[in-house]
Image (tube, rainbow, N blue to C red; front, side, top):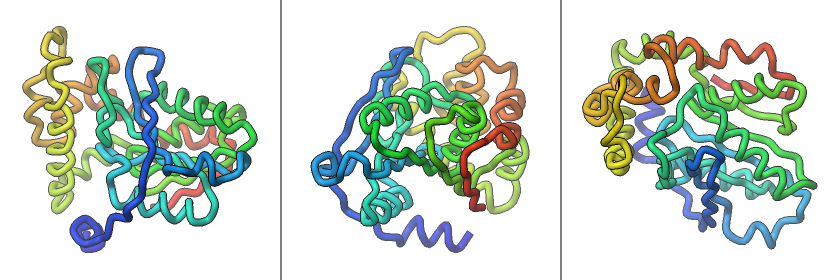
Length: 252
């Protein structure tokens, strides 16, 4: 906890110029890819490519992402940050965010990056929810996965247990902070969601006091789950990891 809080308040944020590419995906949604400015000219076409998947509400503005970005780039890697819908000021163009269950954007980003640099080996690093999504992707693709290797950092693995732990002791601080960040992103794009009917509970999502509240009001309905627990149990990467056939380093 001390390390987490210290880093949150006192860790430096490396300054780096980024070049943004907005990628429109099949369902009309958008994600933002942030590349280091000038790398497309400076690095050879076969330089290894590293795709970064930040944690929940995270993006290329976060210190942990920036540090990985600059470290890898300093070693000759071409690095791109995959900002999910609404994260890192990525545009939201449909009434849908992203989730632990949804792999569509990841498939399209990896395919797009691979097509741009066909001579390069592709790798990926994910943190927290991004790690969960990455491991699920690796498991789904299995032997056909276009990535040469990946790293999972602080992956919750089992989202049912992670949700239970979120409501214990000091972890409530993180839960509330993430809920505030989700609400902030949601309110920027609230007009897209104002006519949603069915099981959606937009006021609950807009004023969520916990990540679970947000997922109950919006996420689980958007992705077709009967309940939050159904969403969590069917979106956990602990069920996917046995199918992973690429080198994978997990750091907890």
